[in-house]
Image (cartoon, rainbow, N blue to C red; front, side, top):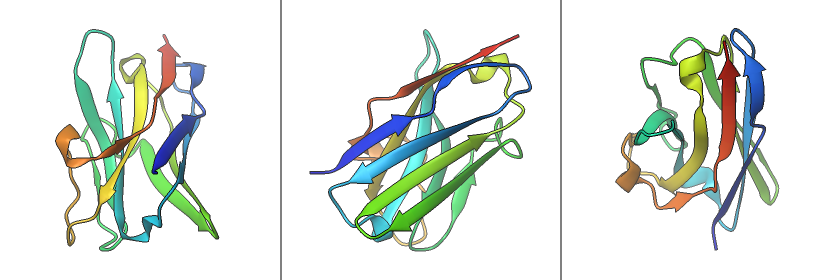
Length: 128
């Protein structure tokens, strides 16, 4: 079955950087849409970025555009999704989740229900 395992979270000062990783297994992900969501304390889960592997379309939420970059590394039998986070702010503090779903044409989903598979999350804390 599909497994998504995030890593790379931690505590960083404002202005710093972190790179999150999501190790995906159990499928061939070349025809998937993969995304990152986050959930801050007391708030709902929020879309951060998504990438459609068929169309190449990438969508970022406005608050991270220009600071965060999504990328992927596909090798034989492995697939890793990355989220490079620069110029981190205290409001970026959240649990970050990796998500995936079979792609639909060029579309990049931005809502939770559009993703079938989820990781367990990794905590990112940005201190001021």
